[in-house]
Amino acid sequence: MGLNSFFTSACNYKRVAAVFIMLFVVSCSEPRDVLYKEQIFVFGTIVEINIWGQTQKAKQAAAVITEDFRFMHQAFNPWQGGSLSRMNEIFPTKFAFSVSPTILPVILESKELSSQSNGLFNPAIGRLVKLWDFDVATLDATALDSNLTLNKKIEKRTPPDPKLISDLVLKNPTMNNVLIEGISIRSDHADLALDFGGIAKGYAVDMAIQTLQEFGIDNAIINAGGDLRAIGQRDNHNWTVGIRHPRGKGIIASIEINQDESVFTSGDYERFFEYEKKRYHHIIDPRTGYPVEDVISVTVIHPNATIADAAATALFIAGPQQWHAIAKSMGIKLVMMIDDKFNIYMNPAMAQRLTFEPNKKFNITLSPPL
Ligand code: AMP
Ligand code: MG
Image 1: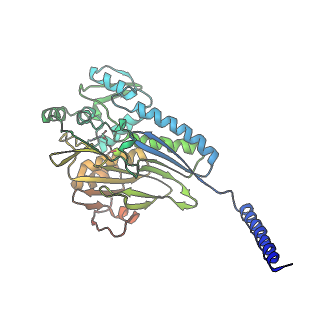
Image 2: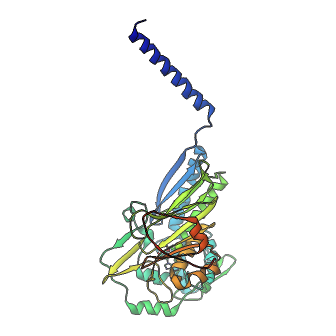
Image 3: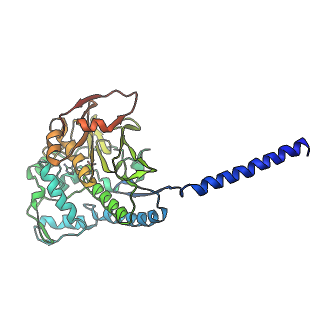
């Protein structure tokens, strides 16, 4: 055997050995889990279904969830031809009618959450929200930034007529003006219209997680434009998720998820316009009729996505002075608020959960425990 052919056969030997070793490793290990991903554009945002492992079941579950999301997107539109818009047409007549079974659970939950928030979370101000006309649900994918988060500055808009705003504030429809008996519903307030923009995404995420669990799927994240609920783990490690920076690009902090938790953020950057150098955004204080001024984002962690969504909206309106009291009355245990001067307020338990991005300085005020 010449030197050359010795090297050739040695190399062949090595190659064969390598193949054997690879086969051995593959046959000795468990089948590799994979991350199954699907995206749909609903509720004015990209909803991402992420399922770890169980690919066959994952595909089936994702198909059901996609259908459900599309259905809810239509059903919860307050003005354009779904179940809720039909209800909003009938409410001013004060006649009783049959409540849509899709909407009823959200109405019942909203009554409770609205009362716990002292009326700051008030889905009964649908007419006021319509007057401001941010119409988040009908946005298309161009409204999303590179984090797939809604981030849309609307050009050339002016605030509505102050007289129309103050009239609706004085009329003050609340969730107590929605009266339910069995499946019969009516309003005793001629100016009530329901807008579930502050809670429907959370409810849809909870429904999706329930579907996954019915399919026997234990490890997943349903992420609706940065608002999410995660269950289980990924590859035996806890899921880690980011909280979007309310002004710059990227994230401000990250959180490791404990088994089953929802992380929801309300921000003034999702839908807004500027008029005479002032920002007007889509979260309306029902006491004034105007967008909240001194807060730019609020993040809530809670096991239930519906509650996390409504609470983030309510605490945004509560502001730096009242958020702690309202969080207590809503039973919320983990909150971070960022004000317009970039001060961060949070409770000590939240501070323990967050890992802030390095090289960024924040002025953090810790509240008493919740
Ligand atoms: P979120 O991004 O979850 O804070 O929800 C904001 C959306 O909730 C807005 O686009 C409106 O549809 C709706 N909304 C605005 N103000 C309120 C309020 N005070 N109570 C309940 N929903 C509101
Ligand atoms: Mg909300």
